[in-house]
Structures are given as C-alpha cells and as structure tokens.
Image 1: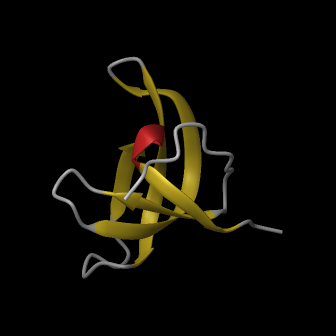
Image 2 (image 1 turned 120 degrees about the vertical axis):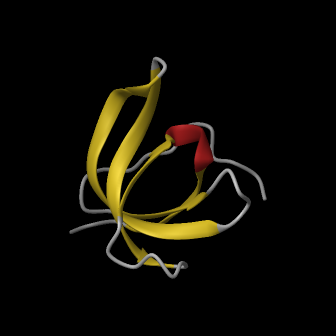
Length: 73
C-alpha cells in the first residue's frame, strides 16, 4: 500500500493509516502536530474502525496515512 506523503487532513477528519505492524486503522483526528515525535509531523486520534482497538487513543506520523476517508463538515 502506498503512503500519502503530503496528506491534507484536519481535526475531526477520518483517516486511514498503516501501523508499523502492517495493519490498518481508521482514526478520527483529534489534533495535528508539527512534531509528533523525532521532529516529524503527525496526528493524535481515536480509533473508530479497522481494528479491535476501537476507542483507543493513538498517534502516528503523516507518512503512515494511506488515505483520508471522510472530511469533517
């Protein structure tokens, strides 16, 4: 699966991202961060699909995002 190197997304949007273990999760974005870890941009969110971890708080790097599923209105 190809990564979206310049994802356009915002707070409240649903995104899909690939975990380092190879699985995918669908997350509702809570916040975008310029430096989520190690100087790289990323996001904080809540798992809403694609995983047994429904409701879990997660974070990831922008380069893990595979697609924007839904844009918040």
